[in-house]
Image (tube, rainbow over all chains, first blue to last red; front, side):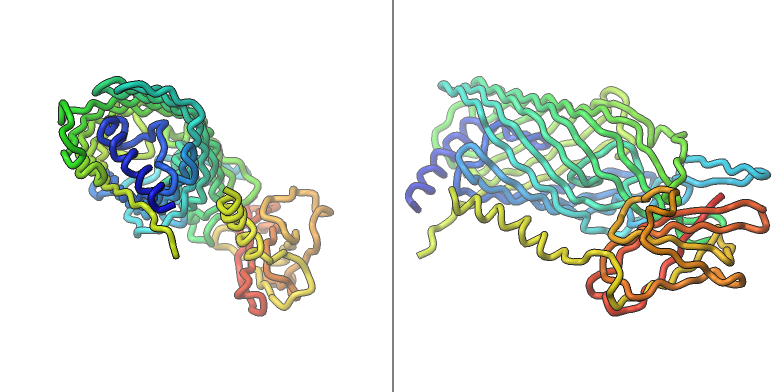
Length: 326
Length: 127
């Protein structure tokens, strides 16, 4: 059993050396973690919002459950949001006998403490493989579940750091010589957040439920193996460059206050939207195992209201192979 | 493969066993409730309670499990003998300064660790 795992790990090292350019910094390729191998990844993502930095620190554990099935768990801590919604997200005024509910442009750059936001579980099943010499075509289905529970205050859902819910989709990865191209398309069915908003008149916190928009994602990633041009041994470091286009379309959010009052959406932060960001990145892989990558995100078409720009992402990842217990 | 499948299946089973609270009567928890419109107390308000509910059951009060009414000079009322679990509270009152009825609902959860305690919450209402 132990020999089998080491053998599969060596095979994977070989494939990592040859196919490292498909280890995209922000997207998953259709390829899997080999059976019995554990991976650990730490990612740090930052962007400046007004005068402070929003950070997300994510720890990912990966496991090759079967040769075609990889499972992952992400544990995330962020200072993106608090437990309660910000003031002015939704409010109402009294005009004579009428009550007018409004949703507004609330203050950005509010200081929030770091919170453990929850767990995101991810499974990827590779159902199609056509491998050749220095080339392959692989396709995989993925499913995702998140119990992230923070007072996210924009319509756009993101399972790992902002919203709970489900997701799934299809990944297609093509590799030929030094170039890898991967297309991911999928959906997000976000849950809602039951929280509270401050009462502007000084009363008790107002129960507020925010239901986020359903989303489609469409990511196109390119990776290019820059160094080495030809392998001499698998301890040689790899250098890969990436260009990733990450797109999302999402629906309008809805707000209910006091359990019964539907609040009209009057801010672009909560309206339906779509955008494409571009993430150029660079990566090195040492000893065919230790992966270090860095990328930055910029708006290409429209923009996301869930984060500011530029986004800085740093990741470090390593695989471990299990020893059989006696 | 069977071992892996059993390991994966055990996770939801353990989670299901951990959540053994079901809101309802016959327990030892007490829930004190105050009804406010903004910062203004609403005396004489009625609060309807729906056991084991997290979502608004609607304005038809016959759909609720129980109700209590605050005294005419008070905005507070109490439900006793509750189990730990989920409850939905729906407040109905009258704001005499606006001369308008006011209503509002809120989900409240009594945790397992508080099953023998007295809990407090506000029910904010609006016109």
